[in-house]
Image (cartoon, one colour):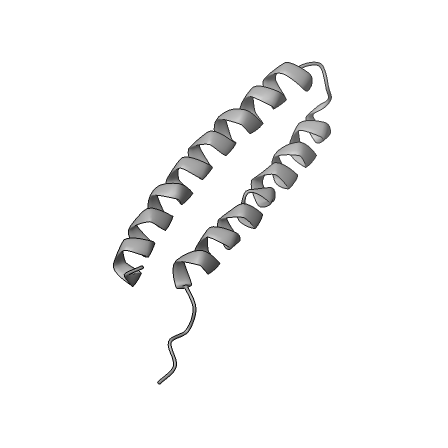
Length: 70
């Protein structure tokens, strides 16, 4: 696959991933953490704010592709 096409597809996937993850994380927090103290909200959003990086790293590695021999 051409590197520019791979980058374009990966960018679209990452944008979708971030939007979907934000909606899901916020919906869960609204439903499950409504009566919790502020520090539980803080811990949840710190952890969930970092976890989206894991699937994004996989997409970025795919976007980089295999190194071509010189």
